[in-house]
Length: 102
Image (cartoon, rainbow, N blue to C red; front, side, top):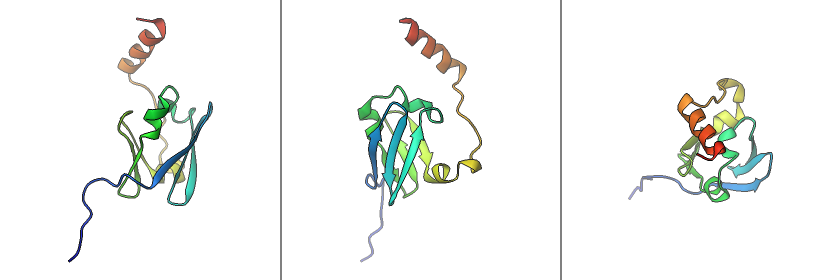
């Protein structure tokens, strides 16, 4: 009998450190640093939300609580992914309201 893997692989990734500068994660024998300057959506996230990460199909990182998806290849070869995060106008308005207490 041959078993096929179905669904998500929820193991294989670990958040090893969270600091004021970014997060470190470990997967497949390698450690990666994700600085908040380059990954700003993690800056205000709760620790529990950052730690709730899943490795899917061996190359896809998914943070369901934060609605964030990253490919391991984008961490290893950032030059292949030149786009820089820019929040939408809606997200910018929401952030302004949040900081103004509205």
